[in-house]
Every structure is written in C-alpha cells, then in structure tokens.
Length: 247
Picture 1: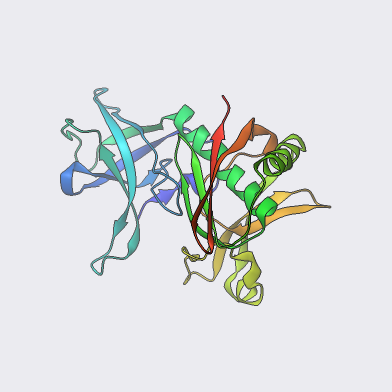
Picture 2: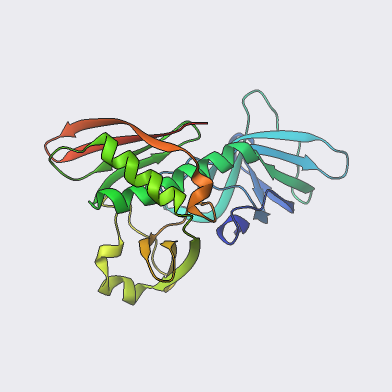
C-alpha cells in the first residue's frame, strides 16, 4: 500500500520514499508518493525518481493505480518509466520522488475549473477528462448553452477568489444527499466509511461540494483565465464543453 501524500496537500512537490517493489514493465512501487495516479478523469502525474545513494535518475512518464488479483483498483501506486528507460532501482532503495510541477499545477487549475463549471451548468455529468492541455466535461442535458454567458460566469467565480477546501463525508450522509454526486459515470469509492470531498465557496456561499479524489488549487483565483472554447452536441441528451487556459 502506498501512502498518498497528495490527498492531504496538492502542493507537495517531492518527498523521500523507499522502493517496495518493481512491477511489470519496470513500474516502481513506493511506500509513499506525491504522484497522483490516473483516476476520476484526471491524468496521472509525470516526474522523476532519483536514487539517493548515487543520484541515478529515472524519468516517470505516467502514474497509475495498482490492481488486486480480481482486477480491482488497489492502494498501490505504479510509477511508470518513460519509454526507452530501464528501471535500475531495487526494493529497499531510497529515492527522492519529484513531480513535474508546472504540469501538475495546470491539472490542478483545470480540475478546479471543472467544479466551477458544475455550478454554472448545474446538470449531471456523464464524463470528464482533465489533462495538462485541456479539460472536457459531458453534461447529461438537452437544449442550447451560451458560450459567452458561460465564460462570463466562470470569470466571475474565478475573480471572487473563493477558497477550495478538502473534507470528508460519511457514506450514510452521502446516501441521504445523493445530489452531491454530480457524476453519472464515476461513483465515489466506498467501504472505508467516509469519502473525500472538495468544497468551493466561502462560509456564507457554497459554490460546489462533491466527492472528489483529485488535486486542486487552494483558491479559485489561482485558476486564472479559463474559458469554454467549444460546445458540442454529442447526442440527444449530451452536451460536451471543452475548457482551455489562456496562458
């Protein structure tokens, strides 16, 4: 099991860790990690692992969740080497695990922007993708959407500098408040009794609250200049919105 440091603090860029195993295709397992694994629509982190004993550097191209014998996601995190790199690390090696911070920060900005969009559109989500290049959300709805109005609303929410906080909700309370689950395609993980949540808004004004395991900025103003670049009709009850950052 990998201790997932990013769950508590998305701004931690590096940590010391110990290699616990080497998996298929040279995937590296650590006892703790700042690398976010692909999940919930958000892309996995890239970065590097540097062996502290001799400085040997292994570039990491992607991060994924491990699987148990039944093929279900496990608590292990797999750090996948970049193509053409051979893993020289061995179990017991101590490494400095460092994420590609500019890439991660774009993911954080985009992911938080999708939560603002959930507030603006206020319809069930039937698919989401967050990459460093852009974000996509599929809303389960018919009818037209006005790009100008959407972008004006997003700009107001960003400028309002709302705090973004991590919390938890008990499974029983979530069952009593099904409206908090915005996604139709990805359900929150259950079994531990409580589920991680992300809240956007001040004490006086709630903008968005929903179960989410992803990484986020601390305040809406950090998103910067974001806009809906495209609206597509993908079916009778499907509207796809594409987000881009202006910088």
